[in-house]
Image (cartoon, rainbow, N blue to C red; front, side):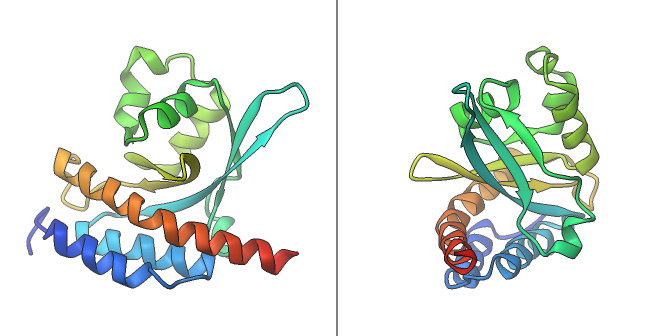
Length: 184
C-alpha cells in the first residue's frame, strides 16, 4: 500500500491477535507500537503506563512512565506527573479520546498547561496522544509521531488509533498484573 493507505479493519484484527496473549510489558509495548508504526507508516511511537496516586492533601496525580525496557526508557523523557485537575489530564479523562499536539500548541484551552507538562509533551516530538482506559480507569497512553508521508492524521486514523487503544487495554491490564505479581 502506498502513502497513508491501509486496511483499518485488517490492521485492528491483526493487532488484536498479536497482543492478546502477551504478558511481558516490554514485549507488549514493542509489538503494540511496532504494528501501528508499520501499518500506518508512522515515524515513532510510545506506550506509557499511567499510575494514579492520591496525595496526602487529597489531590490525585497521574504518573506516566515508559512501558518499555530500562534501556529504552533512557531514550524517553523522564517520568511526568500530571495533576488530575490540570488541563491535559482533565481532557484525557473527561473525553477519553485523542489529543493532538497541534491542539496543545495552539488552542487557548491549553494555555494554562504547566511548563513541566508542556515540556514533557514537546520533548516526545509526537503528534497524537491516545488514552487507554480499562474499567473506567486511565491506565495507559499511546503517543505517535509524524506520519512518514508528512500528512496530518485523519479522522479515520484517529478512529483506528482509538480502536487500537481499546484493544490494548485488556493486554495492558494483564501485563501490569503479571508485573505486579513478579515484583511482590
